[in-house]
Structures are given as structure tokens and as C-alpha cells.
Image 1 (cartoon, rainbow, N blue to C red):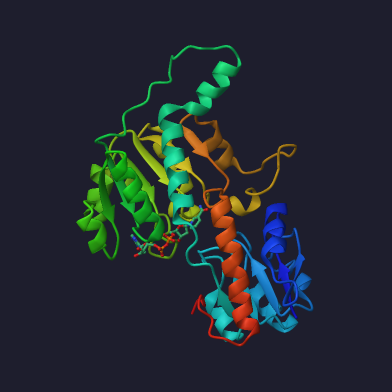
Image 2 (cartoon, rainbow, N blue to C red; image 1 turned 180 degrees about the vertical axis):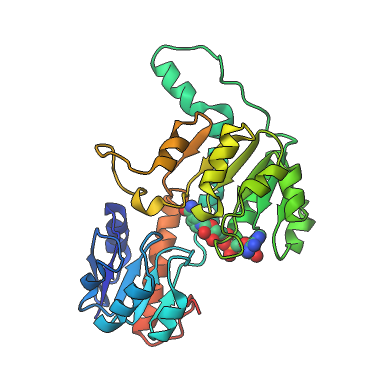
Length: 330
Ligand code: NAI
């Protein structure tokens, strides 16, 4: 029997693990608390831990986990930018993740952000409920024939390209490795500057790494069309927040839709409705009528949760059975 400590657990995580786990082989203990250097001692007595996007698995945390006897970290997400890989390797802790789960979930959420920002359905919903049937200030634009710039055409980006092509858009993509298959399907590839210059909407689907950190900044914004719509469902730190606030203030940025935010770990997934929020940047973002923020929910569909749970359980089972780890991050 392998004991697994699950960090940052929400009721829906527990529901899915309890539903799909083979109780004879794996025993899950759920902690609401996120994992970081101050909470790592909760992993006492566990060989395997399971973490999510905002758990902070830095060098200090890894070293504490190693001392407690943790041998495997199972990420129940795709990105692993929150883990110090070198530290884990040095301490002999192995790492597995869920490399692909329903790219449609994230790509469809990016479309939801675009349509809501553009057609202002959130405002219309509230207006009509209050008996206000006026159309003033609700005017949007046709997506048909607009140029959509896609940065990163992996699993999610490729799905998003196809969705936007289906909407009648011209899709202009940038990736370090342009996809021949997408080119054959009518997706155009160009340089990153061509995407910045030509797009009416830019959607980010590349991973966060030292090369992509703050790729949306004052300089890249200066190359974009006036009134650009920027969508980020990837990782918050792809955008330099003070720079995008400047772009919003100058009206260079016409719309901003984000499902991720650089400082999200102190906010997202929590109900802070009775608290004073001490993050001035997010408060300024929220104050703009043309900014739409969702709290890292792009992945959150029934289908994606099932795939995440199945793959995470399989990843841990492979470790328990001494098999090759299919989804190991090396
Ligand atoms: P993927 O690995 O299939 O694709 C990433 C693509 O980005 C690859 O084609 C790669 O060549 C490209 N790329 C790498 N560096 C680049 C650069 N400097 N410029 C342009 N392209 C670059 O990843 P996938 O599954 O499509 O996920 C993309 C990102 O979406 C993940 O890294 C993750 O951060 C984020 N994500 C967000 C979720 C959410 O709920 N908001 C859920 C799942 C993933």
C-alpha cells in the first residue's frame, strides 16, 4: 500500500480521487494546505506526494521532502515551472506530471474569454436581470476575418488554432517548431514580431520558462495594433503586469482576458470575498471594464478532471509497481 499526501486539495479533487482510485493499492490523505517550505512537514510518513500548479516546490521544500523520505512528486497538472528540477534530481526525488489532458478544455476557455470580452455577455446578463434592456456600450466586433495570433502551437495552441479557423479567422502562429500539419490545415506561421504586428487578438499557449517570461512587456506591446486583445490561459508570468497596466491605461490594450496571473498563488482557488485583498496590481486590473479575469479554471471540465485523475493514479501506480515512469519529467 502506497500512502499519498495530496496538497492543495479542494472538494472536487477529493471527489475525483476517491471515485477512481483503487483503494487496495493507494491510500490518499488530503491536505487543504498548499505545499511550501512551511508546510512540507505535513509530508511526514509519505513516500509519494501529489501537488498542483501553485504549490511551491522550491529548493528548500525539496530538501525537506527528501529528509522526510518522499521519493516521488506527482504533479496533477501539465506545467512544472513551480518545481526546482535540479534540486529534485540532486535529492533523488522523481517527478511525474499529466502532460496532456483535454487540450480542448483550455482552448475552449480561451474562446470563452474572447467572446465574453468582445460581446460583453457578462454585462448584458446583469443588465437584463435589472430590467435594463439598453444596448449602449455593448457593441462588439465580428471575429470573422480578424487575424488571431497564436504563440505556442503545442497541444492546446493547435486546438485553439483550429477553433479560431472554424470561426472564420486568419490564424497567424509562432512556435519555435512550426507544425507542418497545421500549415497543411491552412494555419500560417510567421516570426514573433509578425504576430505582434499583424494580430487583432493574441493568445498565449507556450510554456513559462526563462525565454518566455514577461514576453508581453512594454517593448512587445509597442509593436502591436492599437486596441489589441490579449488572452493568457498559459502561465501568469508570460505577461509583465505593470507593463500591461500601462498598455491598458494608454488604450493600446483594448481587451485583456487572463486565466492566470503572475502573483496568483496568494489569491486563486480561494474564497477571499470577506477579506481585504492586498494586491494592488490585481485590484487595478479588476477595475478596468475591458479586463476579464478567471482564476485558473481553463482546465476545469469534467473530461479534463477525469483524465487528470486517471493519469495521476496511473503515474503513481507505475512507481509503486517499479515500472518505467511514462510521464516522468527529467
Ligand atoms: P505543449 O508542450 O503541448 O505546447 C507548448 C508549445 O509551446 C510547444 O509547441 C513549444 O514548441 C512551444 N514553445 C516553447 N517555447 C516557445 C517560445 N519561446 N515561443 C513560442 N512557442 C514556444 O503544451 P500544452 O499542453 O499546449 O500547454 C501549454 C501551456 O498551457 C502549458 O505550459 C501550461 O502552462 C498551460 N496550461 C494552462 C492550463 C490552465 O488551466 N489555464 C491548463 C493546462 C496547461
